[in-house]
Length: 83
Image (cartoon, rainbow, N blue to C red; front, side):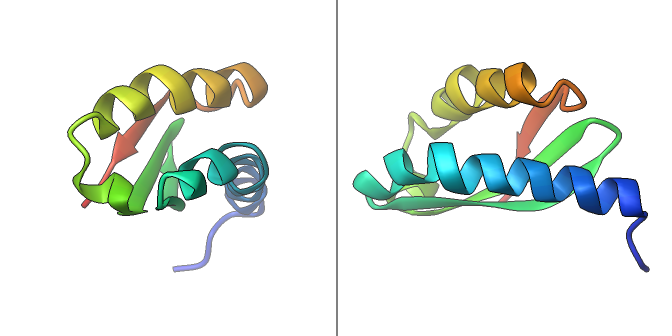
């Protein structure tokens, strides 16, 4: 199924923010993040590398990344970390 143009644009904005601003910090700890999908204000992301098995990953996502996304991209209501 093809994505709507607005959905593509929103996913691009979220991906750009994660790659440019959040990704470098994760890379310093051996991790990475990928946007899987965005549905009704929920950004579904997947963590890779050392972040994927880290017990503090949930806290990192919910408290750090999610706040920054919501601050810069108000259309995002929250993050959902998927395996």
